[in-house]
Image 1 (cartoon, one colour):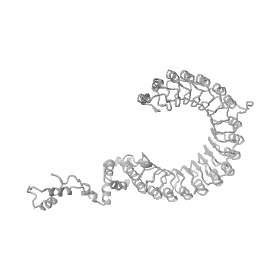
Image 2: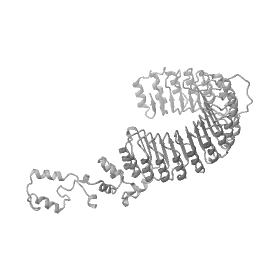
Image 3: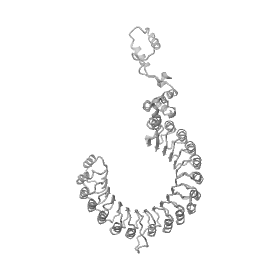
Image 4: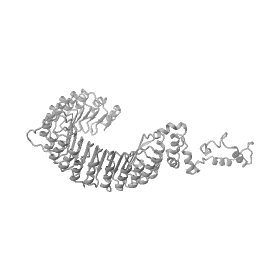
Length: 620
C-alpha cells in the first residue's frame, strides 16, 4: 500500500526517473540490449513506451481508491482529487469524516471539521446528487457543514444524502422542501451519521414516512426543532417516537398532515410538557381533546399558534383556557378557528395570566362583548391584533382603549361604522404607543378624533387604506400627541391633502423618522417643501404615486434633513430628467432609491444615477 500512496505517474519513464533496475533490465533485454549499452530504439519501441506511460491508478478497484483517498492530507487535496472524475468524487464522498487518516499537522483541521459553521442552500436544477457529493467533500475542511437546505428538486436521492451523512457529521440543521425523490432511506443515513442534528424542516416530502422520522428520533437526541408540512405519509407514530426519544424538543410545527391527529399531538404535548416552548398546529384533524391537553400540559409553552382547526369547537377552546395550565404563554395566535367565541375567548383571557401578544384573525364569532371581557381578564396583555373579525365595532375599539395595551392593530374589520355619537366614557390610555387601522372601509373621522383625544402617547401611527378620513379627523391626533410621532403611514388615504402633512411636519418634525404617503394622490410639492423645512431626523420617505414634480425634489434636496436613507418616488409621472441633479445630491446619504415608473427620466440619466450613486440600491 505505501507504494501505491507514493505513486507518481509522470516520473516513472523519463531520464533519471524512479523506474526500478529490475524492470529496466527486463524492458531493454526485450529489445536485445543490455542496460550498459546505448542503442538506437525504433519508433515502434517509443510507441510501446508511450502506452506504458498512461496512468494506471484508474484500474484499481474502488476499495483501493478508498484507502488512498482517506489518507489524503488536507481538504485542498481532497477537493482536487474530487475534480478528476465522477468516480473519484463518488469514492471520496463515501469516506466518512471519522475514517480520514489525519497526521499531526492536521489537528487544527480536525477541530474545525466538528464545528459546523458553513451553510449551503441548493434549489431547483442546482440540487443534484453530484452537487451534494461535492458539498460533502468540499466543506469538510472549512469548518464543516452546519446547515443544509434542499428545495424544489427531483434529482436528489439517497446517493447524495449518503455523501452528506458520511462527510458532514457536524450537520445541525436540515431543510427539505418539495423533494419527492428523497425518502426514508435518506433520513436514515442522516440519522446514523449526524447525531448532532438539532433542527429538521420537512415540507411537501411525500416519500418520507414514519420510518424516517422514527430513525431521526432514535439517533438524534439533540433535536430541538421539528417542522412537518404537507407530508401525507407522516402520522401519529412519528410524533410518538419524537415524544419518546427527543427530550430536548422545544419547537414543533405541524401543518396540513392528514394522518396526524389527537393521538400523536396529545402524546407529544403530554410527554414533553416541561421543555416544549413553541407549538404551531395548522389545518389538522384535531378535536377538542387536543386543545384540552394543550391547556393542561402546556406549562412551558410560550408561543402558541392554532390555525384552521375546523374540527375543534367552542368547548375545546374553553377547556384550553379554563385548565389554567398555560401559565408561561406570552404569545397566542388564533386564525380561522370557529371554536373561538366570546365565551372561549374570555376563558383564555382568565386562564393565561402572562399573555402579552394576541392575534385573532378570521374568527367570525368574536364580538365586542367577548373582546371587552377578554381584555379585562388578560391584565398582562400588551399587543392586540384583530384581522377580519367583522363583529367588532366602534365599541370594541373603545373597550380596547380602556386597557394597558401598548399596541393595537385593527385590519379589515368591516363591522366598524363611523356613527355620530357622544364622546364615550373613556380615560386617557397612557400606555398605547402604536396604533394601526388598515383597510377598514367604515372607519372615519369621528372614531379617529376620539382616539386622538384619549391616546396622547402615540409614537407609531398607521392609517392605511382609509378613504373615510380627512385632514380634520387626523388633526386631533397630531395636536394631542405629547411624545412626538416617530413613524407615520398614511398610504392610500385618498382624501388627505397637503394641509395635514404640513401640520404633521410642523408639530412632529423633530421626532419624525419614517413617513409613508404612497397613493395619496392629493399630496403635492407643498408637502415635500414642509418635510424639507421641518423634518430634521427623517430617514425613510415614500411619496410614490403622489403628485410630486421636479420642484418638490429640488426643495427636498435643499432641505434641512441630514440623514435621508430611503426615498421612493415610484409612479410619480411628473418627475423628469430635471430631477436627476437633485437625486444625485440626495444620494450622498441614500442607501435605497425607487424611481420605478418614472417614465420621463431617460435611460441614459438612469445609468448616470446608477454609476454615481454606487452605494445606493436603485430600483428603476
